[in-house]
Length: 329
Image (cartoon, rainbow, N blue to C red; front, side, top):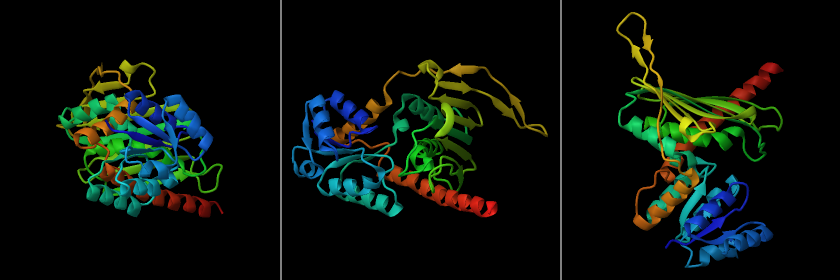
């Protein structure tokens, strides 16, 4: 059985620790606050450790990282160098070169490196991706995703890096290719250099395009992914309270035989999907990859592809914000 030490028992890390504990694989808790580590370890009936101690412990085979984003690279590298399999919350790293180094290190040592792009493991997204792969939508033409809420405000990363990795990961998974062009814009309202709302656009070699809007200055929570193909369209709305309403398919058809395209509308069709906890599915996937040697859906290379999009979008957004400032002066 795989024995896991979890690092970071904060806002999100406690959810990972809970799931690894419920699955029966958690063996240790690491946190910068020794009191937090001891309290969490007592809660789960495991050992409180330092990261160095966990890395030196031959009984610990894997490390789960939910530490601040700026520490992901160094802690993941140390863990891989110590021969541990690694699960790291998004983003994989803050720089492309760092992510590349982690991928190469994991591959050289034949270790699992998995990135926490949670929505790739959401049963409804999994079903949607299966339908796209099976050709039910025909060629994908367009996708739109938003992730909007009020707070939580952050000072160490902007809303693009905090929210958009999930949406970028989902859209890249659906289109099956990287974009050849990325643009972005953003608004800074409170903290200097920290965008509170942002939008990015992607254009793909196959002709499709996608748009993402993220904000922590929205009056209510909204999470929606819209996919439009030649044969059908779909809405995955995770903020819907009822599970059965989260995935709706519209088998609309666009008649292009005339001088102007004409839509032929179809009734909404709700797609039945088993109700499973996405985070538990994600944690189980990590464990299965270690135990069975199976492929990882969101491995380091997938994390690197997402990072490349975010890097391009971040640079474009900063240029857009700088232009807004100079125009206002």
